[in-house]
Amino acid sequence: MMSNETMKSCIDLLFKMYDDDKEDTFINKHTKGIILEFMGGEPFMNVDVMSYGSQYFIDECIKRDHIWLTNFRFSISTNGVLYFEDKVQEYLKKFFPFINLNITIDGPKELHDSCRKDYEGNGSFDRAIAALRDWKKHATMPSTKVTIAPENLQYLHLIAKFFMDEGCTEIFANPIYEHEWTIEEAKVYY
Image (cartoon, rainbow, N blue to C red; front, side, top):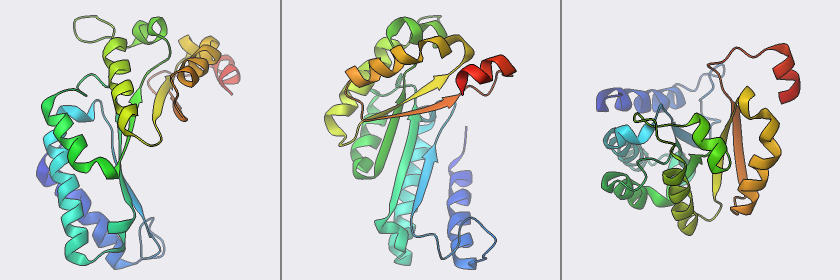
């Protein structure tokens, strides 16, 4: 779990890189906008630090009269399980205009629950879809995220149809990294 101090150090480093303005770095004076991305495991397990960091970033932008104040986003990838927790809802309400939230759902209930289980062995689809449907009420461009694994490659058409039926306008996808893909699996994926 990241601490407030580590979060602050990371944000301070972004501003330092901008101020140092070195051409060979990925952040310098040419960086007109920035996305702070919260990922996990599950980032909402540490929502207090997310909130601290988000507020600290905004405060620093105001203090510095920084160009990023008008061109930044907080991007969050979540499994949606903690979405309805009070602290998470407070965070989402407070920083709403600046949030791009991706709730990871791996397709229809049967597919999702086959690979996403909680500590008690229960599938998380019902909680994740409830979170996505609630977020869609507020978001102007609802999006979601799917993790592609060898086990669900043959169902990609069902996964895409599921999201289209849910009204998602963007679907972000990434392959599972914990698995060593075979050449045959990679060919199917590509």
